[in-house]
Image (cartoon, rainbow, N blue to C red; front, top):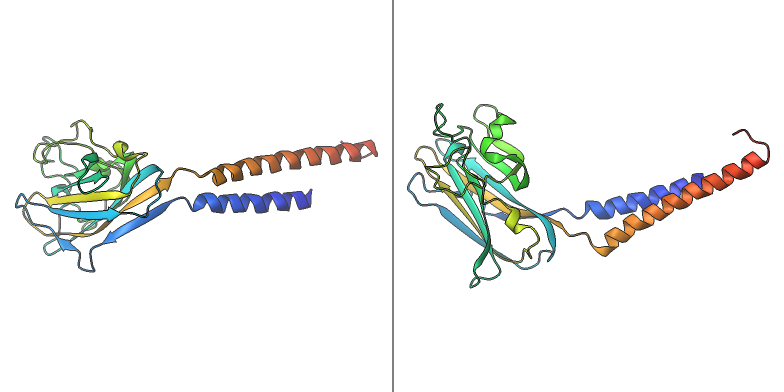
Length: 246
């Protein structure tokens, strides 16, 4: 039984290693100083990236977004960001999402300006807590930014009209299952004046559709477990037949 246990343990570790390799990320760096966004001018910044070597079958896609304060400090409640995808530069846009739409902004109660935290280094997906109301889950230290995994805002309205109750119609769900190789456009705007925001980088984080080898690994592990249990029962039966205690 000890040898079978070791065999099963080794196979389990091998399978675990195979599955652990399935989460991947590609970041689009913008240099050590990042890109300073226009401050409250009504103009934003678009960064276009073409991908050609990513896995062609994706079960889940997230977008990484890293915004940090420049001179005077940024305000998270000023930020509006979207992402779109098209198969080629001449193809129509087939997926679109509002990643961030002035986090914290709401009607009344002194929340018209949104959250005053400084910066965000986040992973945005189709599941998780809403980035628009992140302070319901965590309040960053004074002068700090928000980090972690969140659901994209999805509120596809003018950033001067958005409130917490705005329907979330433009999340990242439309990106699930697409071939990620194509043209990606990130658009970021600092909609209010005062303080500078820098886009330090952004990227794509994906979970490929499990390959047949992965499923085979799981099946093999299950067969090993069943075999080990049967062997144990057989040995117990022999031991009892020889007068061992039950």
